[in-house]
Structure formats: structure tokens, C-alpha cells
Length: 103
Image (spheres, rainbow, N blue to C red):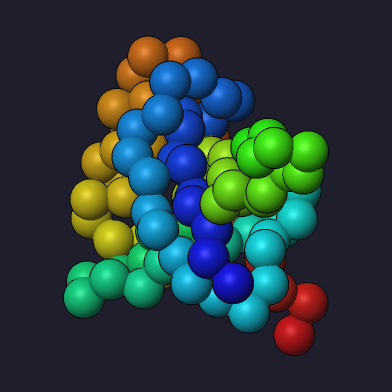
């Protein structure tokens, strides 16, 4: 299943970047997404999912769903991810942290 993840500042706002994904399921509101990079992870919390449809004659065709997610802190975050969070926090956006494991 193909979908896009639109990354926004903590608390929402203008899109920072978008990731095209082909996965087995679309993340739901409140779930966390981690993206593995060479030097750590990017971690994001899903704010909401938008499903778009296009009218084609008398039927509607679904377009690629868009998952809006915001930056969150993660213990294994990449240096770039950390810099983005610090930049947003310097502008007044408070980032949440990935929940600690219960294990």
C-alpha cells in the first residue's frame, strides 16, 4: 500500500518534508513512526490521516493517503533529527518524547 508521510513541526504547521512510503499498513492517529537512517533514526508521531478522492465520471477513485506526523525526540535520533527539533524548539514548538519502553 502506498502513502505519503508529511512531516510537520511539533504541534503542527507548514510541512517540512514528505516521505513516499510503500508499506503493509497506514499508521493511525497517535502511533509513532521511526525512519532508519545511517546515523540514527527520525521519529514522528501521527497527528492525523487524510484520505483524498477524485471524482471520475459517476465514481470516486481514492488517491494516495497522506499521514501528517510531527517530530518527537527519540533516544537513538540522528544528529539531523536532533538539530531539527532544537530549531523548532528555538521557535517555540515543544517536541514530545518517544515513550519509554515497559520492558
